[in-house]
Length: 166
Image (cartoon, rainbow, N blue to C red; front, side, top):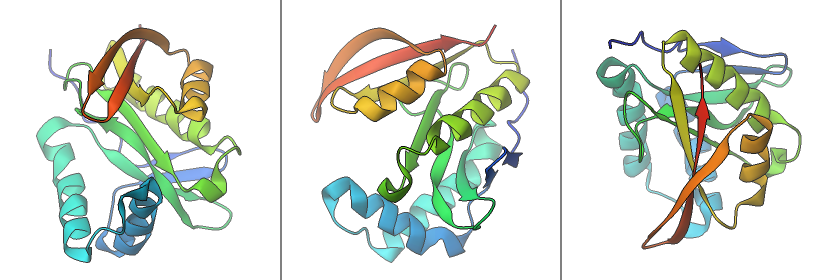
């Protein structure tokens, strides 16, 4: 079944979501550094953004930059990706700066992305979360995701959740 491309501009009460630009590189580097693996090089980060810019044409899916409407600042990203899933049943993904955790932004952004996924004609989404990530589980639970199975990779336990869009 052919799917339509997900909308690349989304708005919520407090957020705007849009495609990446090269001017997002420094903010994305800082966000990636919060993971604890060090600061990525500017070259590596530019390659990440180039991949994000080319992905919608290939898959019809996108991870979008999340900005707060009132301040206009970059706070992270949210969207759909093939990730560990498939084009037919993509994975929802989000990552926000720690300084904005606990304010409902991840839930708000992810809800808009779920609506965008429904608009593409998809029937189901996946999410994968490290077993230690309690805040992410709370976001996904609020959005109707349910645990499906657990797998293990070189970084430990990974919980797979799913949500029907029908």
